[in-house]
Length: 83
Image (cartoon, rainbow, N blue to C red; front, side, top):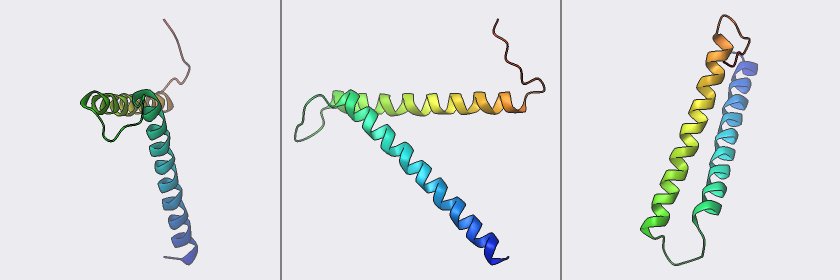
């Protein structure tokens, strides 16, 4: 394998890590703003449940959008129709 190919794979891997970290940071900030209303020594059960629901919602929405984009990219007719 050539040095250029190895470097290209390394760069791609680092970009994917960066994208993942950005997503985690966005999720953390969003769920923190929604669920944490006051500082405290520990998280109560309602806050923990709120964070879990927030993360689940974020993951579900991300997966839904990604699947929708993928289906539309691979569909034989890429025109969108709204009935």
